[in-house]
Length: 204
Length: 204
DNA sequence: CGTAAATCTATACAAAGGTATAGGCCTTCC
DNA sequence: GGAAGGCCTATACCTTTGTATAGATTTACG
Image (cartoon, each protein chain N blue to C red):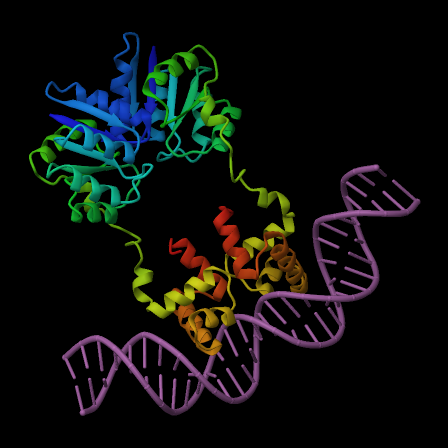
């Protein structure tokens, strides 16, 4: 069974590779970036399983996943990550990932997960997927209208109402209205506070 | 040679442990948090080498390092990290760490690094330590006076000039002056922009 | 000691921001 | 079809913020 592992942390990649190769029927190929992985897939034909680090040069979020799936001829591609959230995991599985392996998982489970995925199942650790997502991504963004988001974007770039108005081709007074509404919805005391709250929430 | 590894990423900890144990004279004990590591040190006496993950429950920055050094009876303690910057590495070495191992290092080097540290040398990968630090942490904070930092803190909390003045027991007009200076130094167009720049830089 | 830099204050004015009220336009939903 | 809500605009007023200029104090440094 041929496995490709791509992770830019040499220590992680090499020790995981060494660990998997202890299994008699596992043959591991490892590389340190997405472009390198892409080249290897084209060169050494489809792998029985590919594991991609989510945070890796060239990976560009989950774009790398999509491209790897397209290249690997229907064989499973999984995501490996140290810091990703539940939402990222769900997104990955929706995009066709064979599995999602947080680096907090036990190494024993790794072998099981690999066999699972190779068998065509989707794998993700139960504990990780059912955890309460305190931020729930952005309850914030959902409560704001498109225009309000536009204005909030301007605020976060430190623009004046007049500048935002020019950018959106609206009247300054309209921007003031949106800023007012934003402050109410975000429970901010003024534009600066609203911008900081948006920043804290990870928008922009 | 008895080694203690503490890292909350099971996959990383277990595969590194397994990798090191392939060396004939290495005996590895692994744990998943700093408090657990502390207990093990007290219980199983000093280790020939301790490796602590920088991002780990209970580690609290480099406080864990200092405490582990104090507990380990003069034997070396090193830091393991996936994301830390050069500055963090320097700080760790200054605080008496036996070494700094980014997870991007090659696994072959790991064994060498371990032997190095055990021999009483300080180890850190040359390439990592000499890299250009583009942000240099906060060139920003250094260029600001204490008062200016106080005011910037207020800005980042969305306070008005009047509120900041009350908080610092100054006149509102003085705050305006500081805000003006801040905008000049940070090249911000207004208070909101200044706050965002500070936030982006990681201050507050 | 003199000087530079940071700090604080004052006055005054111009610009931007925030609030309130009111009305028109459009889409969605009952 | 009417109601509700998002969106845009207008007018008016007041507050806050930003700018300029000027002077007093303190602290650090050569």
